[in-house]
Image 1: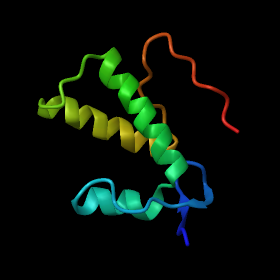
Image 2: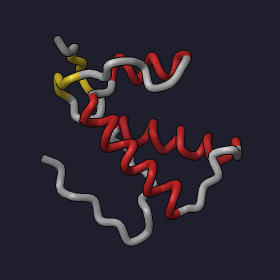
Image 3: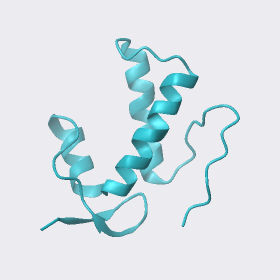
Image 4: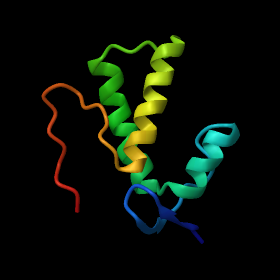
Length: 91
């Protein structure tokens, strides 16, 4: 049986992640408040940001930038977009 969470991105009960995506408090917070659907959307957006902005994941500043964008993404705030990308309309 899958678990559900109140997703902070979509503001409704949705299927939750199977396990925390990161170790520690950040991963636990995501596990408790982000749906599989929102996590999938973030991982796709994160990939675009890494590629478009040529981020080096070995660089602490790049990792910090992505974590800040992830927080904004899940909080429903304005977040960095890849240049020329137009997001699809939310359902």
